[in-house]
Length: 562
Image (cartoon, rainbow, N blue to C red; front, side):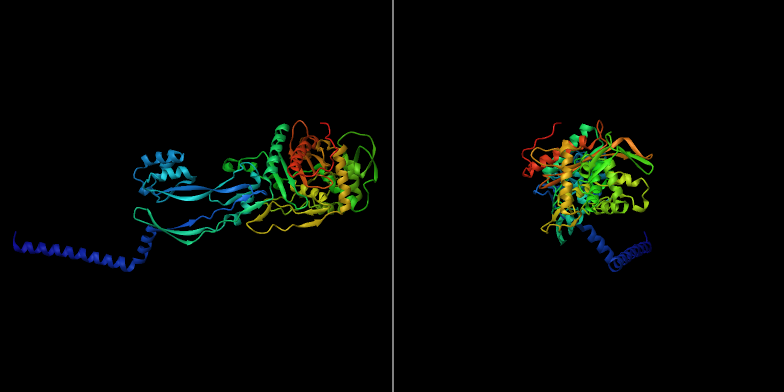
C-alpha cells in the first residue's frame, strides 16, 4: 500500500470521527439546552408519581350504636405489563390466589400497550398479602377501603350502597356522600428504575369522613322486615312496605320493604328491588284517607262526632254510582260510625258538605300533594289533581281515597299528627352527623287537640268493633284504620283483581308511642286491609311496644278472636 493511499484513508477516518463527534456535540447541546426541561419532567415522571390518598368513609350507625355500614380494609393489585417477564406463568398464579378468571388476568398482564392496569380493585386483604409475599416483578399493591354492610339485608333500601370508588350511589350513602366521604389527600412516590418504591412524600393529608347516626333501630327494622317477608309469602303479594314512626319527634324507627336484598351484593340486584318504596312509590290509599275528610268536616264545625245521617247503600255522584263495601240497607250513622264502619257513602256525604275548595285545603293541610321533606333522596310528592281540573265525580272519588296517590311516608305522617295531639312533625331518618347537634324538629298544627282526641276515639272504634279488629293488641288500646284500594287499570278505570291492602294506626292510643303503617301490594286470596295488612300491623306494633317497654294502657283487654 502506498503512503499516499494510507494518508488518504487516515484523513477519511478522521473526517468520519470529526463528523460523528460534531453530531454528538450538537445532540448534547440540543438535549441539554433545548430539551432539558421536557426531558427532566419525563425523567421525574418515571421516578416520581403522585397518587391520591383515599379518605376513610364515615361509619353509619343505628340509633343504638350498631354499625350498619363500615369501611373494611382491602388491597388493590395493579401491574405494569412491560415488567411482567412471562405472563403465561404469572397469570394463572395471580388468578388462583385472588380467585379471578385466568384468561382475563392473562389478557391484562400480556397487554404491553399499557404501563399500568388494574388486576383487582379492593381484593381480599389476606389473599393480596399472600400474593405480595411472592415478590413478582411488575405487580404492585396499595391499600384501599371497601364498604361493607355487616347487617346484610337490614335496612338495605334505606342505606343504599357505595360503589367501587367509595362514592355513594343510592339511598343514604348517596344523600350523605359528601360528609361521609371526607377529603382525599395526595402522596408522591419515589421509585427506582425497577419500579420499587424508595420513598413517599405526603403533600396533602387525607381527612376522614364523618360518621352518621340514624334514627333507625336495627331491632325494630329487623322485626318489620321479617313480618313483611312472611306477609308477602302468606298472601303471594307483589311487595310490601312498613314504616314505624315516633309521632312526637318524627324519628323513623324502621322503614322496611319486602322483598329486600343483601346490600353487599348490590351489583347483582335489579334497580326495582333497590328502591325504598316507602318514600319513592305512590299508591291510592283507599279508606285510610277518610281520616282527612272526617277531620275537615269536624274542624270546620259543620258536624260533630255524634251528628247522624240517614245513608243509603249507594249514592249517585255525577255519572257514577258509588256504594259501600258490604251490602246493607239504609242506615242511620253518626260521623263516628261512618269512620269506624268505613262507609264510602258517609264519607262522600261529609265531603259534599265541605265542598271542593275546603276539602282540597284540608288535603293540603295534612301534607298530601307535597313532599314531607324527609332527609332521604328520591321522595315523591304524590299525585293530587288541582281543584280546577276536578270532574263532577271527583268529589265522590277523592274523599274515599281514589283519584289521589300518596306515599306511605305521607300517610304515616298524617296519622302521626293525630297521635301527636294534632301537630304534624317532619319525619327524619338522620339523627346527627359526627359530633354535631341533632337536626332541629319542624312542627305545625294541623287540627286542634280536641279534634285529635275525637279522631283518636273514632279510630279506636275501628279496631274495637269496626273493620280493624285483627289489629287488636292485648293490654293496649289501638287506634287505626283499614284501607282497601283497587289499583288503576292501564286501559282505564280500575282493576277488578289487583288491590293494595293497608293498615295504619298508633298505640298506646291514650299515650301514643309509635305509628305503624303497612301496605301490601297485590295480595292474593284476600284483598281487605283488615284481613291482609292488620295482622302484620299487629305483629310489628306488638313487638315494637315490647321492645320499647311501653306501659300498657288497657291491661284488662284481650285480643279479638281470629
